[in-house]
Length: 278
Image (cartoon, rainbow, N blue to C red; front, side, top):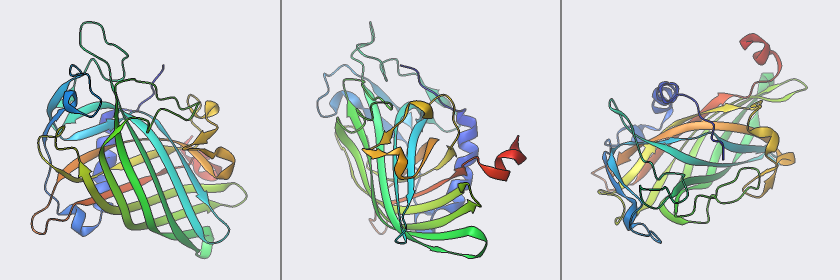
């Protein structure tokens, strides 16, 4: 299985912008740095990996679908996989078993996958700009001892055990529409709550994270084989290749609120914007 990803240095640069876009409460959260004992995850065979310390999950290239409805509502769906654990200022951590089936000589293989969905409302502004507010959504990170995620088949992303889950409770952003070509640019940020991090896996509770995802509508290596995302057909909206990472934060005290702040921004390369970047 081929995996596609952009440089983590690029993602870190985008992350800085994402932090600036996050809500004030989320930005005040304490940094998280700890261990993940995947041998203790639900369904583990006991020889997967113990990783850390790390503070960031780095994603491989994933797929998102954004649907702008005629009734003033908006829906989004996203799925990807973890391809690296990062400790800021120290770099990536080698985990030979990650995304490898039965890694020879290094224990049992496993995968970590991420799925998310969100919904909201939007209003049309002058100049083709649409402002929207998010009203609901959820995020989950799944552990599975059988690496089997498949973008083309649209499966294998949430069939494992959820070891980190959250709820999107608010946020918003803007959508710029290019005349006659549909979505030109998508910018959004959202806040929420990580209601659960598996205490058997993580050395300390995870309260949330901050991230920024780059978006590419015209990716020629991944998108041609994608027909749906989380069961939603590509004909429903704008299909995009999505890349990014989550920098984890600890539970802020006081109060003991588990806040999640994130930014999702990027260019859906169409129309004049695409020509300007050529």
